Length: 432
Image (tube, rainbow, N blue to C red; front, top):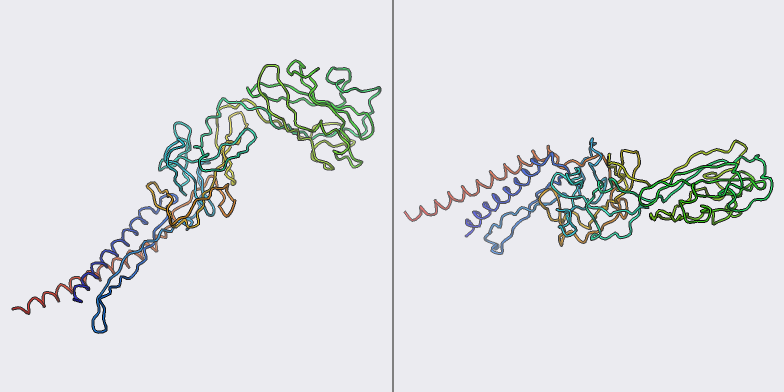
């Protein structure tokens, strides 16, 4: 009969409002939880098939909680360089352990700190994952299975071979032309004295320093002969220590004339060390064709404008920095830095369909769709903000308003139950 359907409808109202109040309770208690995503409870009607033109059978109501995972919280400044936030769409990829077979999860809670082993872990115990970079700062595999737990402390005490040598210098345009003949290797053997010379300390794969010199002599207007040689020559297997030589020409405006210069002199330098240590090709950054960004020729005295060499023996880890592109760099106490990891950002077709996990993390589900993992900023993924944290996306004022709404609705549903009970009691009294 309709009275019983009204009783069941009242009970469904109590259950639905209780569920809604549970969502409010979760939202309010997590108002200060980093990266927390609130729940908005909506309602849907329940309809029975017992209604007719002369009678109505109540169906009631059911709660339909909706996760607000795609709604971004306010990004706030933090004092820790390893506190991270994603400005835009996407999630950090994390694991519950440091091994590659640990379950993968996704989170916006970026309060990462180094643990006792040096791994970056957030307050829920999830380990941040990234692609490890090679000595040149590159990575090749972008799959989820190639991700590793981010740990910059592994580099303490390690070494890397020099891979880049940059020089910007002026060669004096009115310098006298070298008297006599010049043969490649004369500067390395000491037969000819360089009119301009600059020495660099470069490093092998074991962290040992080796000195090389770059010398120049002017042999014609706008034309110089250049050599790169080891000092002492016994450091390398090349004859007389000569590593590279060739002609360097300049345009009438003082810019570098690459077309007229010897291409081999500007090619990568790969020394073979006599101590048996490994090396890798050294990118010589000596300027661009027709530009003033490397070797130039003007009337001022020959001098170095700027230079730089990478590689060497890493010192003790001083700090960790993360740029907006997700590149994690280790900063050492000797002032050097090394790019060590590339952080990915995971995106989904329907992030609101993700499954909630303990510790403010999320897992894949049929409703979320497949995961896409890319560097920050690629294919709609957000950028990474270091020294920042994303706050809860809960509106406290709205939650208190909802609390009043749901409490009143719960009270009203309880009145349905008590009223139907009174009516059924009256029906029972008809027997008397």
